[in-house]
Length: 510
Ligand code: AHR
Image (cartoon, rainbow, N blue to C red; front, side, top):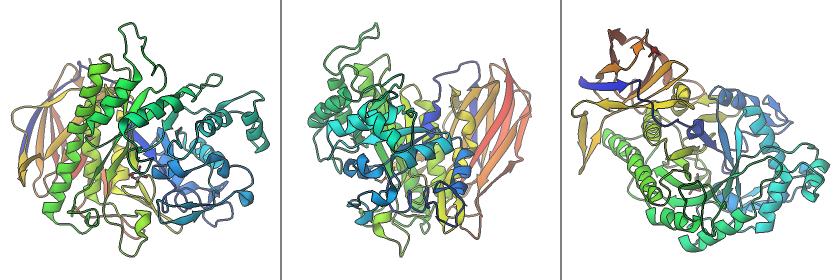
């Protein structure tokens, strides 16, 4: 048994935790779009206009705030005009990044917007900067968001949609240093300014333009993008030629262990050493967020430019026998804990980090959902998103551990095996607690200050084994009520079993 003593200050609310930190990502990759979201109108799988209804229902239960589409690497090969009009007449293309398969474009702009409507999620559309033109991107925005009889609005009407859609989030390409064009930071920054300049606000649609950012800890990339944006002045004005061209900068960080790219390790078959190394990598996200934030602070102390982590999650070897280009992997209790420690880091940096998108929602990488024919599997990661829903748009709260937190040595590095964060909204406090220790439970004692706490309720996500995972025929990883939560005066006592994630909520009167 490990012990942790912590202090929670309910009367010291910090930054708002944007619900967009719980965003998602759907790329034309493997079975994410096709088979995952989209089955087509003639499918025996229950669907609305071709969109799988079981997937919609499961994701609605998460209140997913936004969905990024169509990529990823695919975005910089995608030409949106191929994905509108009668499906049988849409041109085909080769999905060169993902399996070299032929894409028939049956899922395009109208289908994506219908999906977002069904989900109640805000669309985050990534424009093709790598192989597309500024005109093409500008016309896509006009097609999506313009109300009058402009040429693109007319084209949209001819394709059956009268009213413009609302598109709040607009991505300026993806990984321009790699699959998105193989550019240097300076060349991309110029291009981002150019694309951003012609990414217009039509009517009352306001685009939040997100420049494609760094891989992991490439802080220089962020610095170049900040330099090119211009400098914010105290009165809220921005100087320089980057004015209004992009409002946020993204970066990507995957949890990848394993010795080489060809050997990233199995998603389900791993030993304890590999488990702890995965956790080290996952916890590293906090250092990287802080690194980008520090660079941005130097140029934008008022924190007007957002930092967006629009791809994150685990990346293991594909499941044996599946297409290597489809990135299909199972999802275990280990993945759930990777997610929960990411969210704690996100909550602590909510003053700068405004959005994050897990890669990817269905059947690809660290998925929420796996489909198997007409069966649907909720992964352990799904449950972390569900249990943390109360943090959406809540005020973060300081939760500090007294003394040394439990830790263990992993190779040369020390891994802190306890992680927690808290927030408050509508008179309720929500605490998230992760015990990364594979064998020992952790007894947590929290001194609740600044408010009178009411009766607590807890939920627990755990399994016998850290490699436990759910399938269509068995669900060993499930959420249950956590009985081991007690309030004595202002002291909350919670026991979190080994390799588990728990949440505790209680009303608080100030
Ligand atoms: O999510 C899979 C791929 O990972 C994306 O297409 C790309 O942006 C990243 O390298």
